[in-house]
Image 1 (cartoon, rainbow, N blue to C red):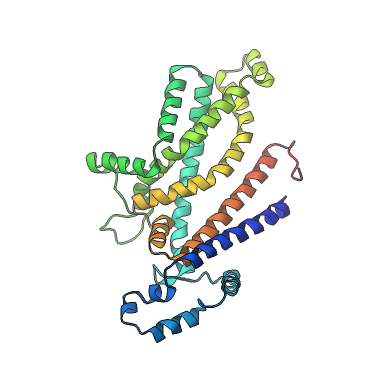
Image 2 (tube, rainbow, N blue to C red):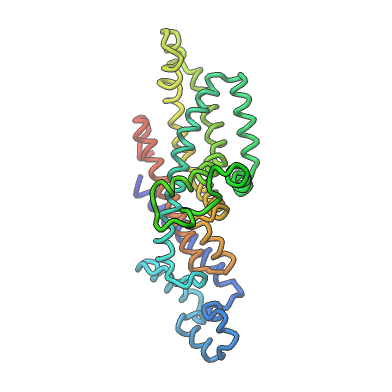
Length: 318
């Protein structure tokens, strides 16, 4: 199965790279002037032409693409025109914070959705079930950036409980665990709330269906406690399709992280992606897109392996 997934990943990454390269080639922005910055207004045309020759931007597009792919395979991701440093350095400095935000948020969403969804299914039709579903549908219609701004207005500005942004205090001389954890409460909470409705509603419906299965009804007939029936029988059955949802929903979680990082001024890939898009920094945009695509493909592979490990009836070669 790993070989088949890799065979699928190669054309996906190839199509993504071609798309990003085509967007960069179609841009009206002159790479030489963009690299020169303000000096481009006083630079001679000969100097600009020399920059283009050094970069090979006047070569045929197939030649440029093959050279770009060859550099990628050697680990040379190019030069960021908006950050004025190698793209690899930008990713190395910021990708860890984005992964931290996504990882913590995913853990919070999984635990909360499993608990809330299972309780709503067990009390389906009741007040808690109706309130939870109404809240989930309402939150689902709210953009992540709007939730972030609302959270800042309430918890940072009005109540003063949490910092409005950043990763550390302004007066901090270093990066400590407690300081980072304190500053991540709002971003993680906002991102978790924006992504949780999908998972909560899915778990609620899956557990509600599982409660009607024969083995769950038999457990109830044997007089087992309701908590054992819910979490020991019904929820375990509903976890298998839930694993698939986690893998397929990861791209939206990554997209939400970009918005949340921008709102809360976190030093992750979100703000860098926005500045790269505004500055037409295609080398950085292409690298972030390719890395994100590779992470999503790897996460889907891990999800498939976890599904097969959780259910022995699933064959890896099916």
